[in-house]
Image (cartoon, rainbow, N blue to C red; front, side):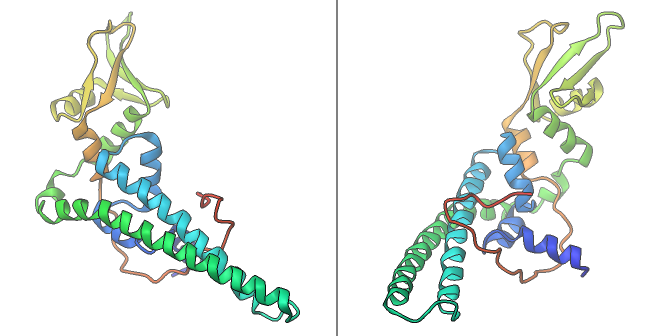
Length: 233
């Protein structure tokens, strides 16, 4: 593995359960977080990502106090009563942070187990995965989109808030598949809102599984003050 690839793998490891989450959902954690922020996940996956974010912050707290304890015992500070007090206080803080982390792990597992069970009992899921083009269209629609009719040509097309244009034929395929719906209560020349259905959100959550490169042991991220959310790329 190249140095850049190894570095990227290290940045992806936000918690001890990342590999298990990725195996169950078919997405890396960065993609899941991005989908959560865009509101394209169904309720079970949304809950999982929220619990995972709490776990990441808890893991950061453990790393911070462990790093602080290592520094206090490194010989950098004079050995005196003040140092012993700081070490005792840090040990307690590390123990409390570990308790919070363990509770967060249990919450993630509670949210993850139903998703794993669904994946195990859906052997035909691979055949139902949406194409890359459909996934891109659903992601664009999730950010806001409308179906317009051109006043001069009469052609229909979907324009997403991101500027992406989706041909009407592709929209019809998504509608017929039950992945999106069109609000026909609005005049088409003014724009009819297009939105994801529950099935569309589920299809994104079950999106194309990335190729597996095998399990890797990844180093923990450097410590940071626990009240600061873990940085995202």
